[in-house]
Image 1: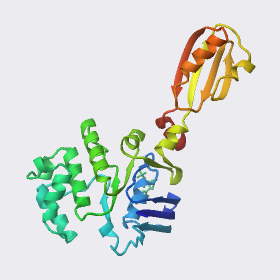
Image 2: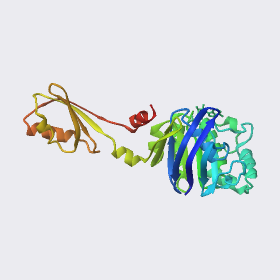
Image 3: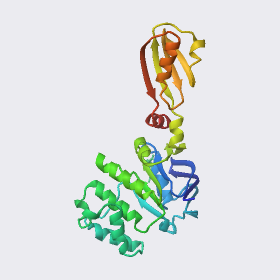
Image 4: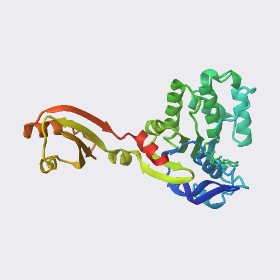
Length: 297
Ligand code: ADP
């Protein structure tokens, strides 16, 4: 297992930041770690990287226990902290050489990560001359220079413009081809764009740990219809795949389905069979965005 979190809690004085979280992430997965501000995402990531000591529980990276005082797990982890702290007066290559030295890896790795993170055109500049998106690439290059198998990225796209966001998401996907990636965000769309699995936390509690396909298949489709005449419930019940219905006003009905196919055509067919005309029809899907809102309200 690349990452294993077992009943981990963290209290800062009386403030519970993480409350008995458990999950496992297999080799090669890209997992979105989602939650509103203050949910406990950074705290959990800092515990995984050994910078914060858990109050309870145990964390493992590549089956090795994370021991905060020893740096034994560093070889397996690449970490991009929130706000990406960089020495901005340094040149890109100079900074990466400094990081390579800390990890005791050869300088030949520098050109490799520069290429891998798309930094080649900016490699000879000072970090402060770079756009925010390129600075983020420098942070990611520094995080992967020792070729860790697990990458922990804390809000890697926050503060970037829309084009930079797309580029960094693509870079995360590319890195995910041979690394396990856990990245935090407070944007559901980001998770949809980059990963197959999402872990949602709120106020330190685990709310969801699911594959996106599972979440999507559990989504409901709600169709509101107004017919020209009254219809009896016994006929309505004949509509296929109907999960529930509500006759909320005269000839107005609300039908709920939990299938992914668009059920509007089925409603048209039903109306025709019953000799009814449809005066109005609206459809709405519960998006992943609204699921997130539900889990974190
Ligand atoms: P997120 O990354 O999801 O925004 P954090 O892990 O930063 O959440 O914070 C979780 C909670 O723990 C928040 O209520 C925050 O105020 C609190 N917290 C985080 N770091 C500290 C700290 N060093 N001292 C005291 N409280 C903290």
